[in-house]
Length: 122
Image (cartoon, rainbow, N blue to C red; front, side, top):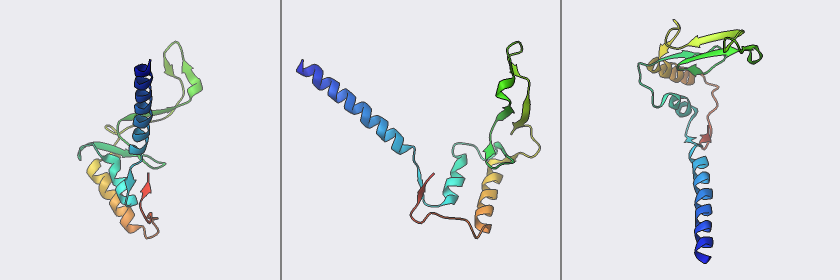
């Protein structure tokens, strides 16, 4: 009985600690806004196509903005599609390398850019 209680305690303690460390690891700390913006493309090749979206941000891949209430059971698709974006086929797409250059230029040109004093979480 004591062994079961001990094993259960160790198991529960390990589960709690592992979930806590996962949550903390996902809060990456950056020294500047530049690092945070530049890190958006970590893991992507420099020649991969990205699309800068009208409301800010970048898209890698394809997305459709739809009216969620317009789903058609018969066609298994949405009847109302507001916008559709595809970074591979859109003529306004740029490479990851160009996007990084644009971000760097925007941050260095913007004198009013807010930088965290002691780093920040993004």
